Length: 70
Image (cartoon, rainbow, N blue to C red):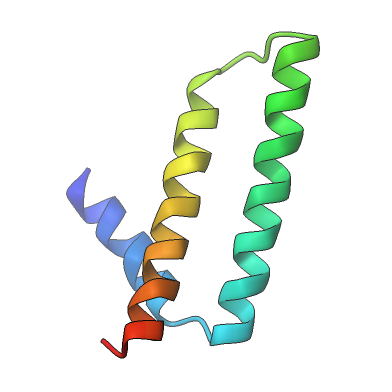
């Protein structure tokens, strides 16, 4: 599992700043839609909400690192 997560982090690092910002906005919008559809009609895999939140957190962490200059 650690290898799959490492690959995701490397993918986020390779994105340009503008692409990273767009990806964050897209992921947040997808999370909102998923939460809404889950509230109306329970989705098949509710753990997908958790994985989406974590993906957004990884993206925002990379964005914050860039702001700090790491």
